[in-house]
Amino acid sequence: MNSTYFKYVKRPLDICIALLAIGFFSPFFVLLTIILFVANRGNPFFVQERPGKDGKVFRMIKFKTLNDEKSESGELLPDAQRLLRIGKLIRASSLDELPQLFNILHGEMSIVGPRPLLVKYLPYYNEFQSRRHMVKPGITGWAQVNGRNKLTWDQKFAYDVFYVENVSLLFDIKILLLTVRKVILREGVNQEGEVTAEAFKGNFIEEQDK
Image (cartoon, rainbow, N blue to C red; front, side, top):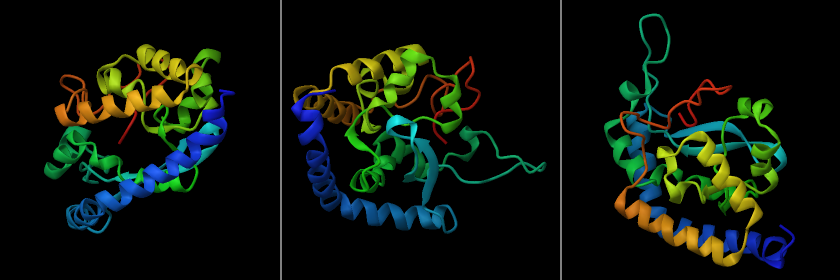
């Protein structure tokens, strides 16, 4: 946490990588925006408040892979029924995370760090779990390359805190390389039988990502 890399290198490196990624993926970004604009009837993005470094709340943006179809009672249908056909492919390739490159440029996120969870979870963290907020949340992280949504909540927190306590340039490079491998192999996107991560069975009552 007090390393030269963390203090002086990580943020400029994030900006450089984000700018390069935006340029490289711009054709995909434009194409997916148009496709999801049509599929979601005018709203291609999913925006939600999430806690960042030190628990400060920011507005995280993703491509919207679930529609807003509701039941006769006015309640949103289960995720499995709302997942767009194109959304399955977008999630499997992790392209739904592309808009978060702009969160990085805005200074709210990092390329590598613990994934931002829900704001409503904040009051329920114990001291150990809350350490994940000592760094900016990331598009990818140590938990993501070690199982992503297939991990239990305890495993996710353990990996997140391990990253916080061991931030380094080599560690970030390792995570990025493993992320590329995971995306290519499409590993750990969902838990078996689940569209997204299973809901936390303790104090957490809703799913991690919508």
